[in-house]
Length: 151
Ligand code: SME
Image 1 (spheres, rainbow, N blue to C red):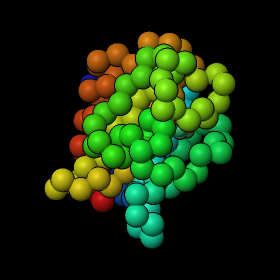
Image 2: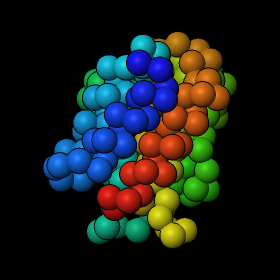
Image 3: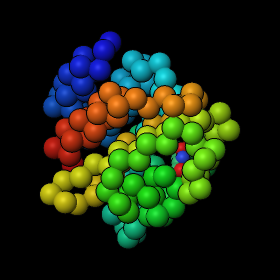
Image 4: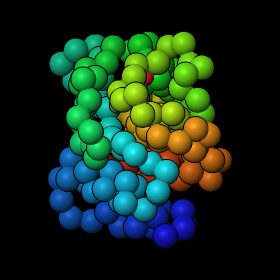
């Protein structure tokens, strides 16, 4: 599937039947299945019970120790704080990084924003360096823009 078809399918999932978490899980499965370079795909959501804390939501891939991440810590925490997309093409060169698996080489984190409020983020790891192309970045950002509708 090309990125255009993946986006179309993601929109169908987002605006289809099911709970928010079921849709987030289906989006993870779609990206994991359709993008060869993606090896761990998941969501971290802003914890409603603790300020400036992320909690792990639906994901596809190996279990991670990082189920709760404070804002500012790691790539995920930095995206939560800055509300900006983070693309790291070589994680060995990132100084504020939390290793999920020794196999991971590159990562993208895209915030989900609604009316200026940070709600959560899409986090994707690749076991390949330089895996995050501008096209894949745009795909992830468009999916997150669409996901804001179901938060
Ligand atoms: N690498 C992330 C932590 C999350 S795991 O990759 C699933 C980070 O630096 O925030």
